[in-house]
Amino acid sequence: MAHILHLDSSPRGERSVSRSLAKEFISDWKAAHPDDTVTYRDIGHHPVPFVNEAWIAAAYSSPDQHTPELAEAIRISNELVDEFLAADRYVFGIPMYNYSIPANFKAYIDQIVRVGRTFSVDENGYKGLVDNKKATIITANGGAYPEGSPIHDYDLQTPYLRLIFGFMGITDVNFVHADSQALGDEARKQAIADAQAALKEAVAHW
Image 1 (cartoon, rainbow, N blue to C red):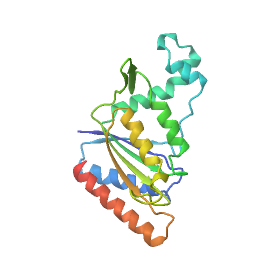
Image 2: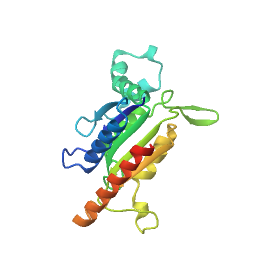
Image 3: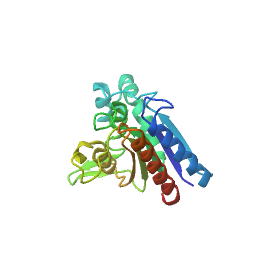
Image 4: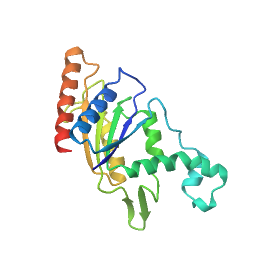
């Protein structure tokens, strides 16, 4: 039995492509794996706070040194990290904004990338502490940035997400891109159909 953390970051509701695809994937997954459990978090509609000075002071000091202010500053981060570490698998719906990730998802990343919790550092360098996890990341993009295309390097979203999850130790990451959303109705429908097919394949082999 696996435990899945499902997170949406689009501020849209029913019009969100990443939300609808992630919801469909979770529904198909639960039908195939009824004993698995899912925790859902919606940072598109309920964003997490940005890191501030008190957060930094709390994150880089011992809990027994925390004042009430520091304890409160790091409280949400502790909840998010505990939730993140409790999951075996991750399903994240993330739209592309200006060739990268939305600010709300960056805020989430900044809350969970924590020394001593999700990574460590010593004289040998950095080491991810999140082992034996898998992630499926569903993106929705206005354009299309396949390898070999003249604008492939415009996609700063995929390499950043691969890097930051790998930094925490998660290297088994499957990307499903619903691209071409602004390239006409036919291209949009085909891209969504391709993404749906890829997600159904993931249900069988993830």
